[in-house]
Length: 253
Image (tube, rainbow, N blue to C red; front, side):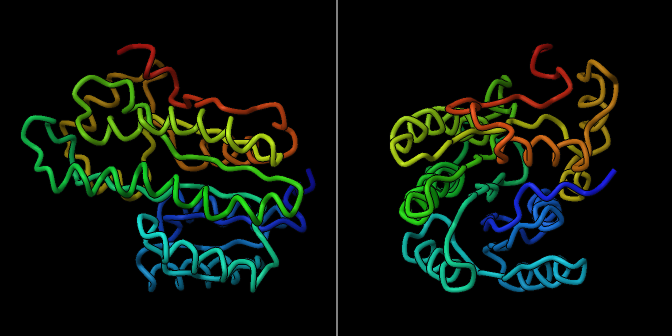
């Protein structure tokens, strides 16, 4: 079957794209014709990821960005417009986990603010800064990276940010509709990216596996097609909704 080119002539901005799922998204969008902005707080990682996309025949530029800082995000959008004329798709993938599901009652106020600044405020700032460019091009798509941690007991501050993001998704979809901009979110379950493999201890991996209806966990290759579909014209009627994509995990908790 011939490779689809659903994003030919479009520009996709992906935050947190220096590695992991974000990098997988960058490769996939580029393979379908998109010009990709590989944005990451780690400038070296962004450069390496963009170079990898280009080695595979794609078009990409790296941008160092702090998604919680308005000036930094504005600079990212300016670089995107300078390089590719505008923004058509924004994937708010950047996120902070703090390494484990910390208890709400013991996590420091400083860490509470850090994780909300990145996971919630960061998505809002990026959406706001991209809005004008999308509107000038007739519309666009914003996809927020949620998590089934939003509905998991004792997921702590991380889960709280992802639940907040479901509300943000609905609000932004309502506010941006007049500009022809759809806003959706995907809530992955246990996906064994390299970062997750490194973070989970053996006992936690066993518990994750036991919680799966299908007794297997997903890989980035499972999630990427869902993300591309939601950002494509094929999903033009998908809006203001967070889609769980977890193999049924959230239905067991």
